[in-house]
Amino acid sequence: MKTCELFRDHTVLSFEIFPPKPTSPEDTIYRTLDGLRDLHPDFISVTFGAGGGANNQKSLEIASAVKHQYGIESVAHLPGINLTRSEVLTMLEQMQQQGIENILALRGDVLPDTQPRGEFRHADELISFIREHGDFNILAACYPEGHTESPDTVTDLRNLKRKVDAGANQLVTQLFLDNRYFYEFREKAELVGIHVPIEAGIMPVTNKKQIERMVQLCGVHLPDKFMKVMNRYEHQPEALQDAGIAYAIDQIVDLITQGVDGIHLYTMNKPYVARRIYEAVHRLLYA
Image 1: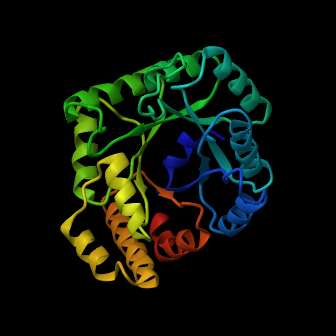
Image 2: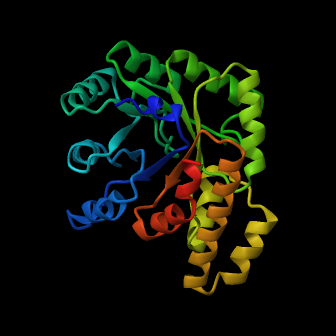
Image 3: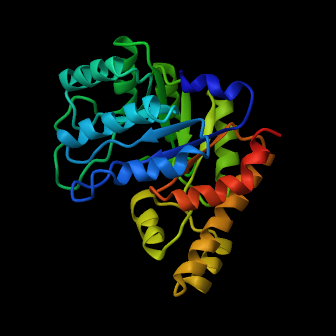
């Protein structure tokens, strides 16, 4: 099933998971999926394995298992920055063979002091290529606070419009901690002619390292309310986890109340955290 069709009758809830590290036990990811199965997400997206080769195949294997073994629609991530057209074609063929209909098409991270070796320098180029070579549903990323490499939000919105015009059927946001950024972004996207479903990406913060990583990689704004919670409990791991989950629940309840198309939960492969949030909000999704 193409996930863009899910938004017709309710607020969509989806999860993101990532392949385990090569040093982790083989069944680690399946224990994660076992813990998520009975939460009945509308779909689960699987990030692209770092390092290429066997790790990429592992991502496709997991996405296929999500759909065929767990009975949940899957989305395979596909960053193009280090892939040639030939490599992407091969992956599209493999996805078709495994019945994977949904792709999150990304540019991918540019590594410091490393020249990208692929042929896709921007996500819209990859989206156009996928659109030409298969009947896939294509998701794309968007950035409520603006992409860290974009000079301003106007330029960022123009780039997003290129993705949609190239064939993206739905969007999922980078994580954010202040819902005001999302509402302002959603309004501006509508004004520039972006009329596809937009899922709000929410990451429950459960430890201090996550905060530091978010600021470093994403440039995400840390609201005063959030920092007061984090500073109060930073030396109490269990209390910090509970506080981070509660903050995410508050965000999600507000988003659903304001008519968000969907919630995309970055689970960090922690079923317990996903379950706490699901139990708090699932009735609101179908209200």
